[in-house]
Length: 163
Image 1 (cartoon, rainbow, N blue to C red):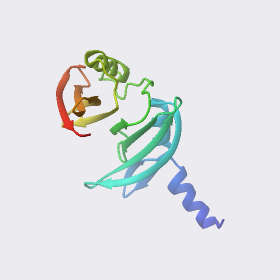
Image 2 (image 1 turned 135 degrees about the vertical axis):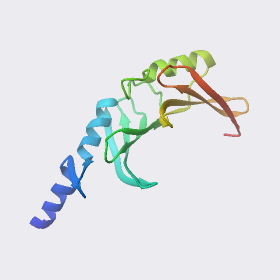
Image 3 (image 1 turned 120 degrees about the vertical axis):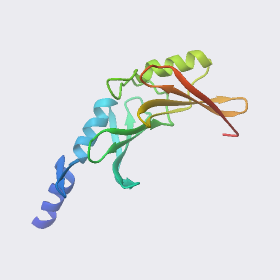
Image 4 (image 1 turned 90 degrees about the vertical axis):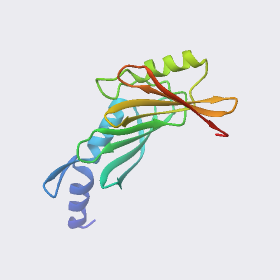
């Protein structure tokens, strides 16, 4: 490998913080550390993406119990944009930010009130509030229930036939 190529690899992909146009970017190593600290496991894929003029890291992780979890993290701030999973037992525990109820508490409340297991879930910010979204199976198809992540209260329920 040429020294110039080694220099590019070192400063573009390895160093956790980079300076881009005078701004500090949340680096790939920071991103990997952040997701593994939240949910221990193996990072299997990481991509830099851009949508609506916002850059973010998209990270896929396999948890220690074998569930696949996807994360989106803001490139500039390192803050969560989205955490979700459509695979697994969802037996991991995490609290994505300090002002919200833990994932397991929210999941347990929903499963007990519904009497059903969760099919998939997400943690996302809607306007200025964080929400957990949980999908479950009904006779008419998949339905979603949204939970205010700060209070743990149910915000809404919606049904989608045929899903």
